[in-house]
Image (cartoon, rainbow, N blue to C red; front, side):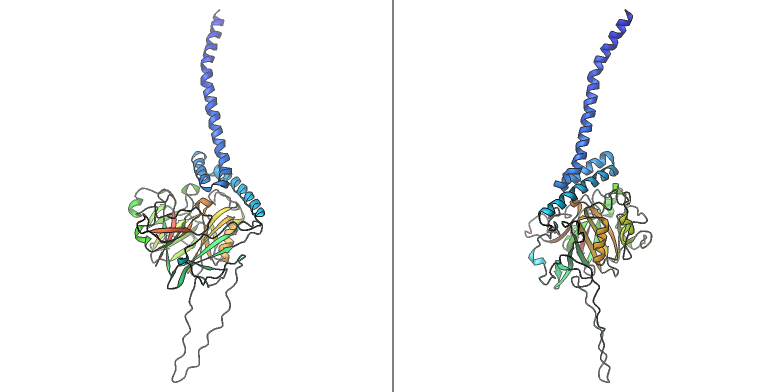
Length: 423
């Protein structure tokens, strides 16, 4: 009898537990279903909507961390690449990267026509100037001073005048290179920037990269182009990876957001305005006159040579993204004489192909910036047509495929960026 009562009591307890266990199973199954759905969305959604894909990726990084999400993003990149190659075959193999429309008043009509395939060629040999023999009544003729021109200077890869002009001279030039014969949809757009006429600035986002307290006092107008600079604003472009992808160093106005790491590609701005791109710990170390720096991954080009590490996948070094993954990529290079800064953006490229394009354009040192279509931005700015508008300037993207926001960086941005003003 006692045994029967014990069994009866046990059965009653089991009945009371079943609803609770059932809810646990339902909740667990629901959570797994939602998580799997998010994983599926990260692989598929970016093909259709870059902005939604970026949001899903950020959500998953907060749940599982950057490494698993980066591995899944590689799947997404392969899907996008396969889809784009198929679409390109149907459309006749035309590139799916196009210049954006640009106000007529900002273009130079003497621009060199665009070239489809753009090899780098050496500068032509010039005949030395031979002055006339001096006489008693005449002095030797002086050697003419060479005139630099952002459109016509070598290496000549089909540069076109781009953006504002000053005294009839363009401040920037653009060119397109088609370097991957297996992917006819892809191209790398390049912008050559005359640093004798334009000054580079960098600005942290109001969230990224992560930063300590007190930044507001050191860097006013955090995350946006300061109003005092907007009247001289010419262009702006995206920065680098978020802190979670490697905590790559950044300093602005002598205020360190993240400390520098040896061996990384770095762009630095000095108090006299000159720019250096190089590898931290060799070409670059912190000095009192260094005003700002930004790091992002190993260098693409070092002293004129493409980094051999670009041909070996090392996810941790490249922000957990495989450097051979085919995706939108951006980069920044500098000529050996420091005269021209070169921005590059490709709509479907590996890190090595991006480096090749920058090398063809004359970059002696270069580094990668951000990746993915949603984060690739290069904008030129002109005064707003209506002075009563909230923003005094209006932006125009370099490429038609870039996310359109005419007030990008004029209002606070989450991510860091660079901008250019007239000197």
